[in-house]
Length: 416
Image (cartoon, rainbow, N blue to C red):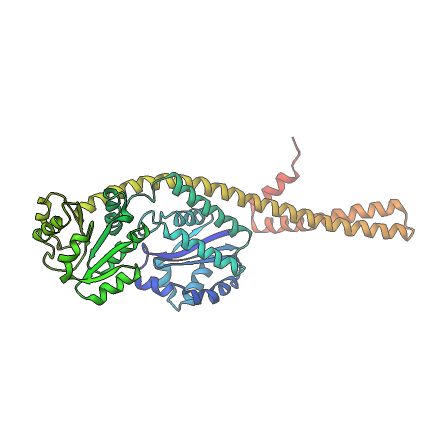
């Protein structure tokens, strides 16, 4: 009984290749049953995200078959896929899945979204009757491990992206962040990510100012904000407790004078200004003003570096947790194999015994001498029980399989 993990991710493959091996939700409906039809695949789960595509399989299959299937399904050259994929078996596969779900293998260390994606992949496979005893237990164990890692380590704490660091800084300075008014200057990807984090932390008063009103509206509408143009900054700045700027302007668009006027209109209520742009959007001289607190992307980078160091230390703790749980799961798996073998062996021998006992009863009912019936019963049972082991010993001897012969020797050895 073997567990395999086969995949490609952001560490091993380019975006172009990851796009080629990704499975859309529509494809999964066809791909998962097709994978299950492959020789020896008893159970299977397919995890497909923007940064990884992974197959988790249990059964008497082979890595070559799985790589060949994935390459064939996506019509990729086999050697190209083999060059960029990673392969894990048994305990290594178990530890890999647990690390993935815990955020230790993500592009951003400790990011929490991957756990939800792993749960979705498991639930989809379960609904498709593709999850059996082994993967059911493995994924449930994995979810418990991820929860333990999240609760007992700091691997998911502290900001490690510029957008999240900016919001985290705002939360530290404005303890009542949901009641604060926020102005985003610029409406690119960074601004949109900042808006998402702000919304997740309960911010309701969100303004988005951009060179083009259409793009400002595209971002503002997603988060129930208000869209404006950059020309409206003199009127918008006095309303903002927090200003986060991330345009592509080659020159500063918010000067010292503009902020000084805003502070007067605010009656010296403090303003937090976070400049995420390179080149900078906000003049450095703003720092000279009382009640204006300006942070640049360099300031945030120092926070991010320290936070990432803390996450890496927490990741080492998480790996210890994962190792302990993976060993416990492996022990259960070995016990499962052991129990299955004993059960099958007992059922088989019991079936043989029942057949021979019924034959003996029939002979007694027909009037055959009891002594002859007992002798024949003993001979038949002995012959039947020993037939397969004897055959295996002959084959082992002919093949020079001394390991198998040693096992039989232990079975027949004296107890002394």
